[in-house]
Length: 311
Length: 289
Image (cartoon, rainbow over all chains, first blue to last red; front, side):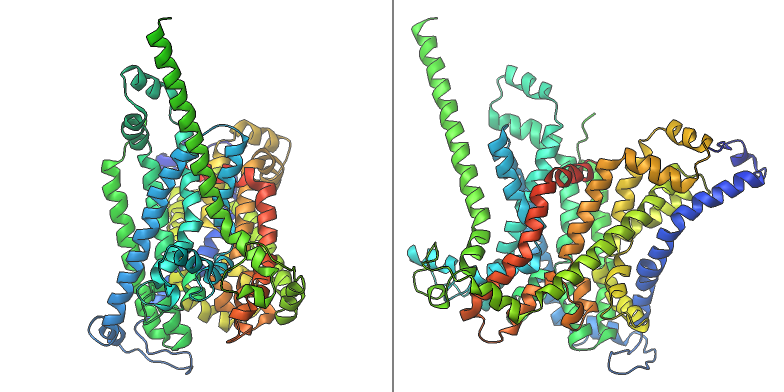
C-alpha cells in the first residue's frame, strides 16, 4: 500500500503532495457516510430543538419563534399530566421488556443448552419470532387475545378465569402488549446468552466440580458472573430498543384505552401527525432524547465499575 | 465394586435420566407455546367464519376454506405491497452495503487526520434514532416531494452506523499485506475494497446483508410516516391495512385477516430457515463486541 508516513505526524513537517493525495482519497471513502449522518441524523437533531421554539404546525406553512412556550406547555401546562403518564408507561414497558429478555433469556439458555440436532432445531424455533414483523405478529396476537372469541380467554375459561378484557381494559392493555413482546424477545435473550456461554472455559466448571460445587452453585458462581458483560450488552441494547416501542402499540392499542399505553414515541407521533402540533411533538421528542442519552450514559458509567471481564 | 457403590451409581444414572427427560419435556413445552400463535394464524386462515366464531374453538378446521386467501387479496393490494417492499428492501440493503463498505475501509485501513474522531461521530448516530428525529426528517422529505416515493422510503435508511461498526471490525482483522500486494499490482481503492476485502470477509458481508434485508422487510415506523396511500405502502403495514379495510367487521373476517398475515410471514420464515446460520453468527459477533 502507500507508505505510512509516521515521521510526518508529530514532527510538524508537511506531508508530500502524494501522501496528502492518498489521505484525501482515504477520506473520500468515509465522506458519503459522514454526509449522510450530517444530513439525516445530526442536522435533524439540531432542527428538532429549533422547531421546539416555534409555533409550527402542519396546517399552516408559516411560523414564528415563540420562545419557551412549548416547554412551558410540557412542564407547567396542560401537557404535564400526559407527559408524566407517558413517561411512566414507557419506563414500565421498558422495565418488563428488560426483565423478560434478561431473566427469561438466561433461564431458557440454561434449559436449551444441550448438544444435538433436536435442541439446535428447537433453539431456532424459539428464536425465530424476532424476525417476524411486529405489526403482523401483533395482529395475530390480537386475535388470540380477542375478549369474546380469542383462544387465550377460552383456555382461561376452562380454568374458571375470565373472560379478561385484555386490550380493551386500561388495566390489562399494557400486559397484552407485553405478552407479544415476551414471545418476540425471549428467544433473542436466550441466543445471546447461549453464544456467550459457549465462550466460558470448561476449566472453571471442572475445577468447581472437583471442589464439590453442584450444578446450581456452578451456575450462580461461575456462569452468572462471567456472563455479566453479556448482561450489560443486553441491558443497554434492550433499554434503547424498548424505549422506542411504537409498532405493537400503534397496531394493538393506538395508545389507549384512556392513554394507558400512550408510550413516548406514540405520543410524539400522535402530536405531530394526528393533532398536527409539530411544535409540541418536537419539544417532547427533544426532552425524550435527553432522557435517553442521560440514562444510557449513566448505565455505561455504573456498569463499567461492576462488570466482570474474563481475563 | 461394592454393592453400595453400585447402588449409588444406579441412583446417579437414574437421576441424570430423569433430568434429561425433564429438560426435553420443558423444552418441548416452550417450543409448543412459541409455535402456537403461528399455528393458530394458519389454522384460523383456513376456517369458515362460522367455525371461527364458535364457542369452543376447533384446533383443526372442519372444512378448509382456501378462498380466504383470494378474498384477502381482493381486499388489499398485496401484490403492490410485495413489490414496494422488495424494491425498498433491496434498495436499502444495496446502499447500506456499498456505502458501508467504503466507510468501513476508510475507518479500518485509511490514513487521514481525524479518522478516529470521525468514527465516534458515526457511533454517535446510534444514539439518535429516527423515532426521535422523524419530525424534522419528515419536513425535509416533504420539501423534496419524497412523500409516497421510493426515495422517501429508502434514502433516510441508506446508511447504517451499526453496519459500518461491524464491517470496520472485520476489515481491521484482514492483514495489511493482502492490501499492499493488491496495491503493488496497481489496484485502486475500489478494487481493494470489492475484490480483496469484501470477498475475504464474505461471511460477515452475508450476515450484515441479511440482517439489513430482514430489518428493511419488517420496517414499519418510517414507512408509516412517509406513505399516505396504499400505492407505496409495504408489507409490514399491509396486514394492518387489510384489517382496517374491514372496518367494524373485523371479527367475522379474522380468517381473511389471518390469511393476509400468513402471506406476510411466509417469505421471512423461509428466509430465516434457509439463512439462519448467517443470522445466528451475526449477532454472536455483535454481542461479543
